[in-house]
Length: 381
Image 1: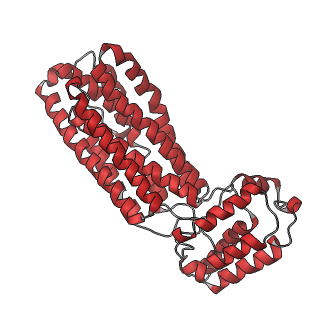
Image 2 (image 1 turned 30 degrees about the vertical axis):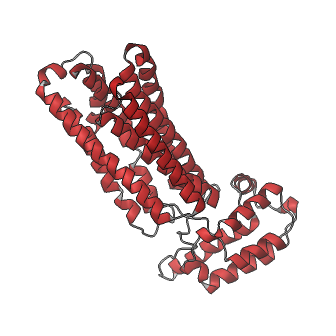
């Protein structure tokens, strides 16, 4: 789950905003955004600890109140650049340092780490709030970005030759574009955790879930065919209205539980349809195995898939039709990471970052399979 930016209590933040020395306009704007986002953050054990509150008050009084604009980021050039780049003003920096200080004391005393403002006290790396979640989000963006030229090329090549095939490929082009936007939002959120970036992260995740559901629904029920054009338009209009309504509801009444249920519904529905579709494709493939396994049209795509499967010890074409079953079951099992929570390893790696690690792998082979699947459908028609 996403986590809100750690803040001090409302009373403390009001004092920071109105009593701190003058700051650049954009920095003030971010402070007001933080203030507006306070209702989203829930207090935890850590931020209620007297030692944390005293640490923050001392740091604020000794460090922040005495700073001049020219000495604001005077620790060293690297820290200065990272803090300015990622919006670590003095108060937020004090908040972070006191979280780390209290956490170190507790760990040295043999006590468990505690959460602050509803999240773990991650160790900052180059100014990045959650370093490994950021790296893994960037990797997710990259695997989708790397697949985009391939799918776009197939889409353009089939627009005139086979409009139905082009229609199906366009669903994957759309999914890739939405995925790249969604993982960009995730990366930004994990770099710096503000209410605004958290909102973008949730919006992006919901859009990816719906785009994936759209792609498999159109494929499974054959809505890419010309005779089903009106049904496809109606379905996608309804889906777009549902997603717009979802965003509107979150804007008017932010509800984490509702948002989670929305994403789980579309995510699980897509998984079920992909598995059903894979089983159906497997039946079609095995009915004429001697033809399809030697098809000159399927062979280049099978070769590409088998080259990737060979890295995990699977290099036989009979496994290809059932790939979506394996990939979706892998993702379903990985979802458990989103449901558990444990103290981050080295205060850097938590369950959420490991979930982002798991989602990197399926797209590496997923879109190769989609192209193979469409070629098979064309030859089986």
